[in-house]
Length: 438
Image 1: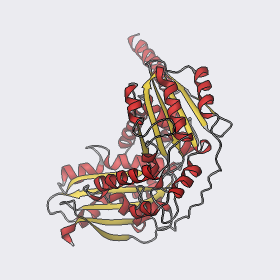
Image 2: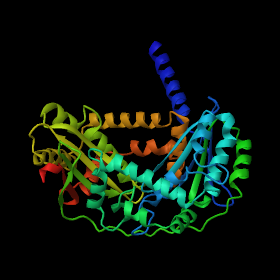
Image 3: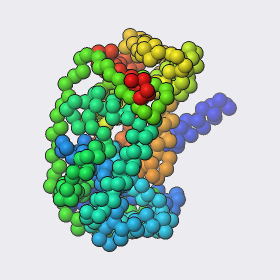
Image 4: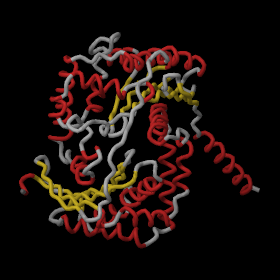
């Protein structure tokens, strides 16, 4: 009797728990093309308002790189109705916080406030979209800010050139070949008119999604959205026709030097499909299998058992058009980089020739279920996920259904994807060396 009761209780708990994880949302378009997503959660008096623009580092002309990242900074400069330097003060004085980021594919702005400041948040983001101040003074100011950020994060940071080096190795035609932050000489050479034209092209409502999540009243929120964003004029449709890359059919070997490091690094990298592909999901599982924690294959082998590496990690860097699969390792002591390459290739080769164990497969499934649940544990996280799933995947409901994609990945899928993308002839092997090793 107790067993039946316990089984029934667990079944009921599972149903309730699964239901609790579902993210309810409503989405619709304004007449000007702005896509709006609303998520109501009245459990706490907080809201997150965010706008994601479909513009990133890849959206540029040759010789004019880095504009999207530049605008991430410039659009905090002020608007016709928010004076220069007042944006952050306005947020903090009303108990809020906010930030922004730019990837190769999108730019994302958000503010989180006590829910009684919803109208303020909508006004501020509508101001950013409709009334930005783009003047030479602001451009010059932010140019220096971007240069300082580049010096701090890339030029003077240990291993700061890692991603730019990998990108240039894997791409020769697609804009992913150039760093998201761009080249400073391109920003220096750009005219004020070019910056204005860039804004007009990409920062229109029909190239954006507005997400409002948290303690809201749906009908009142819709009225406010229409009031603040409805009058903003639609922009011209953005046309993207980026060149395709030829397959990599011969291993790429190169060396690069970094004056900020003492310990060399080995990087092996592969060009992979865009993030909407099921294969990209499989590569995420392979990453977790190889280096997701101390019990993962590469960490346990190279760090714990054989004492050959200080650190090792495998990452599937997901992007809209192509991904990059990167394995990064630091040698311990006098371990040659060639040894690390051989040991890593041995584990990748096993993925191509053997099925992972059923035990490891179930462990992966449990890890991804836990990660999926945790990703929706805050209003800010939900807002970001809703924007990403709509903008980069074309399916907002992936916030609820994406876990099923992982659940349907088989051990055979893992083997087949490794065979398809992780072959020796398809990789770049990069020796990332201290400058004094030249």
